[in-house]
Structures are given as structure tokens and as C-alpha cells.
Image (tube, rainbow, N blue to C red; front, side, top):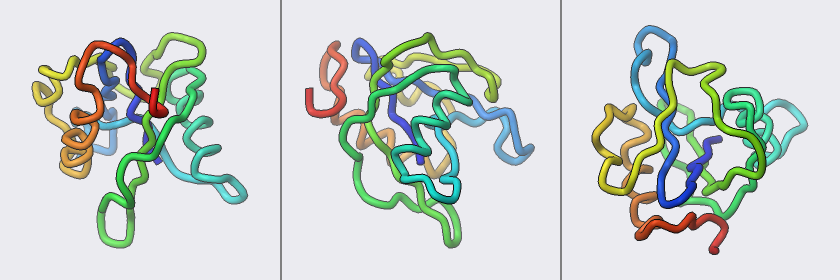
Length: 131
């Protein structure tokens, strides 16, 4: 699960710390679903653990995005409910304007998602959950 966190027309990107093959690449924050959790519950938990923030989930972006053999990633638009993101488990965080979205080295699985998110943030207003 992953969150496309948008604030003031900017998208939050997180730089991976590991594993070595992915370290330094940029991604959407998120993680795995634990037993007994819904996708949405897992994503809220992961944002708390990885970023130290509470998020409000909006609509889902696309369907199942291929992540690797036998794996998919599901992405939701999100907004911050409380807290300021801090890279607890990442090397760095960066807020990207629509024009800056491709100025960083996104991980290959995240690139097509960035294109879909770009279409959803046409101006400077936070646009998650259909608002």
C-alpha cells in the first residue's frame, strides 16, 4: 500500500534507505498489510510509523500497480491530518510541485503512478478525496 500525500499542490516523495538495490531511489510512502488489517488501516499505520503523521485517505488511484513478480501496489490519495512528515525510515523526504515531479529518480514501479497522480493535481490546491 502507498500514499500519494498531497499538500498545497505538492506531492510528498520519500527516498529509500534500503535494501541496497533500491537505496537512494524515490517512492511513495507506505508498506505491507499485516494480518487482520485492511489496506486502508495498513496505510494509515505505515504513514504513522514511517513519517510520524496521521493521514486522511481519499480515493484510490488506479487498480493494482505491478510491483514485481507476484506483487502489486495499491495507492490512495491522502492529506495530512496531523503532524509534519519526518524521514523515520527514509534517507530524505521532498515536497514536489507538479513541475518538479520528474526531477528525482523514482523507483521504476512508482513512475507510472507519478503520471497518474500528476493528472490529479492540476493546480496549487490539495486535491485528495475528491475535494
